[in-house]
Length: 354
Image (cartoon, rainbow, N blue to C red; front, top):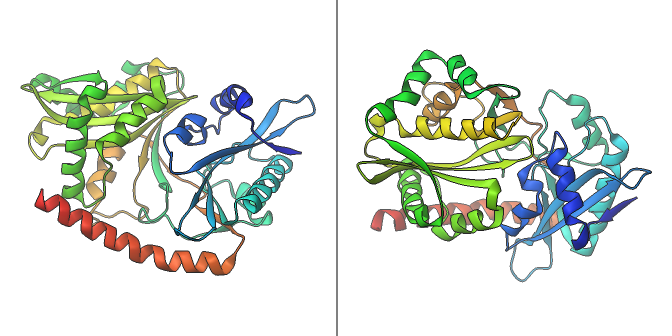
């Protein structure tokens, strides 16, 4: 029988997801603290000895003010063995009971599982989930396509020498030209947020404000690092990374329009890979890239940058929905693109004025 996690059980839960191969920072209670506008709950399934054998943390939030209906979202969950249908079914049953309590119109998941695991997807479909069809062009909540570097049992020197020669040269370029990098605290967040805004306006995406990054450093503590690159005393690039369990993720990256020839992003990327090695991690995750990418694609530069580090191109199972209230789901999904389009136009207009 599944159960809803109690406050006093959080240390046990955190230990489980950190130790499980499919554990993910987005399933952590720490990440729930980063999302104060959402209610965080976790469902666990136990074996006969009482030990947790599977879990699914969900974020719950009203999407339309004034209406009682909520979205329930298990970001990068559930966390189970891939062939364990019994545990998956137990967790889904628990999620459905929780959804009834919170008037959820949909349960949304996007597991940290490769699309090659077709049997796993078929289990989820048999339990009532359907692929949404999102993800090809960053239109899902989380990226469906990523690059991942295998760091298990490898030294930093071994990984460096395994890089293509051109990438290795770019990693070393900044230091030769006077760029320095360091791990920073909240004192560097204003510079990082400014660089994020500059990057967002350059590349056409909406960014977070400084408080979001400050809260992340507070909420995730030792699991989060802010790396900054400086040239002649000026902040020219920055990245935010998360370490959790046996993985490090590159979460956010920003750079100035100036001094891009100094390749600070390559230095920072290497710093984060070194952190994965330092922590004995199995994987370093470069995070998202688009699906079908040609040289004429607007994000080809991002794809080529991440490709240059020699990681594996991974497609996840994708975003899947269990629709509990079809009409409400249709109504919200129809109105949401209009709202997001207006939000993006206002953001770009505000950025240009500033």
